[in-house]
Image (tube, rainbow, N blue to C red; front, top):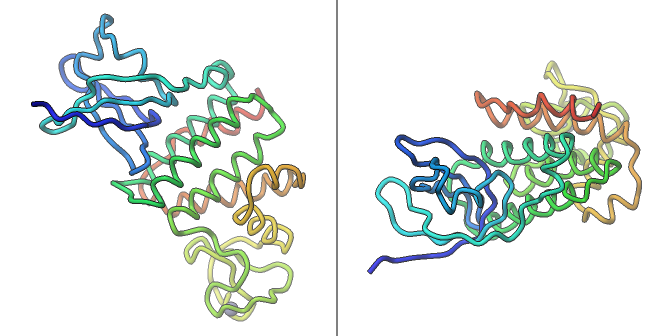
Length: 254
Ligand SMILES: [Zn+2]
């Protein structure tokens, strides 16, 4: 008898395999899964339309040789709004690509569930098509993602000596992943970071979206935090390039 199991997933990536097959990468509550969609390149493939980027699907999976096989699917949400608007779509592409490239393998609870919930939460915000929440969603997603993965930037204390009453204009070291006090800074490289920016970063890391949104952080601070996070994440990606980051700037003009 064929063993079938079911899982809920968000479609992160779709690639062509040889012949008529596709390789579908989904984020589940247990990490990333690569599944084979047999014959999905054919226009007659019944399951193919369900496997578009962003789609939240319930998948029936059977054991395969190199990759497990998709044998059934139910669509839960296709995020139709965000797919219709380029700005929101570009933000969405960035989120999918970040998750896909930052996660290498299986992730166990609670991390896997937290990651899944974060991506779903942020896709839902994008699907509301509210332009005023975009700068916050972007910063929120990046900060919470690094937190779940265990390397959130350290904004509060000096990352070397632990000093906590930091004075204005400390250095943020991308290499060490946090702020350095005047004493520890020496010749390290990084960017100067204001108290306000450090406080805002900590505040976002520690609070829920609705609460942060209602506290109305100004866009200049969010812009600076976004820039910091993009460089920060680049450090963690090493050689891997995030292609969709180039669209983000463009998205702001749309
Ligand atoms: Zn120090």
